[in-house]
Length: 85
Length: 269
Picture: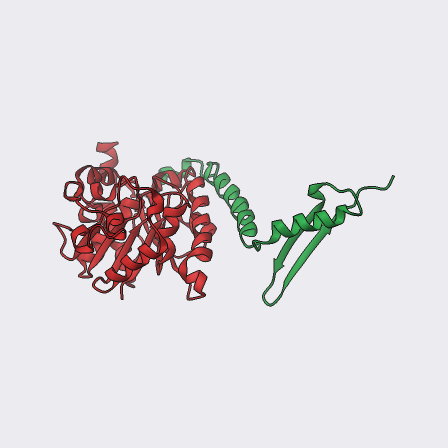
């Protein structure tokens, strides 16, 4: 570093750090989706249909995810029921 | 058996064809019999970069469809011995590339060549998938810029799930990161993602860094693979990348700002 550099502001104020942060988030999100099995959307639709036989729920009230660990996979099913009136 | 290397990126305009031309020229220059195939059916361009656009008679699709033999379609490079170009078709539809057709030609080339370099079209559609399907190794060309990095990550996902190696459960395609159009000055100012940032996000080994340089445009204007410009930073950076591809250890260069000396600063400002 030269003598004059001491007078320059060295703070990381550029847009590169914003780019990195945004990329880390979107790439992690997209990798998560990519690792989900192909049958998941169809499974979600069928579950929705079965539950609707009994309870009226919206499309986004059933969440299906697969969590993969080293030696086992967990199918996580989250159903939100409407509030009772 | 030839080693099949795909040059891919997802995003367009990042330097796939420039890289394909230089990597294949570099491999051939080191004595390996190499063929470079343009997979961009409909938008042929490798021939221009390799300065053989006026020598194209038959193309990749002609060979797949049996209208010409490989020997009729292969163009021998005039500068580097043991380098051949297989140009893309301009008129046919993308669907002309079938898995079976591509496999047949790669198998035939495999018998006489050491390296087959596949120049992928942009995107993640059929043509790009055909280019990477049979690959043993992949050079993922990435600019230090958000959309390019994101697209590279998507291409890595496709390499890991839709390549032949992935489908058959063989050893995965060997991935290499090549960062192009790198501007150390802008990185230093915090305006551009650094190589370390890109490496961290994509998490694949770094093959090389090609500095942004006027030389690259000059070379393509003239139809010279930039690696042949031995005296230039971009040319040397590509030569380093080829050496590393062949297993040689070379330190990365051109990644930091060339500090100007006192006199240079005084007189060139």
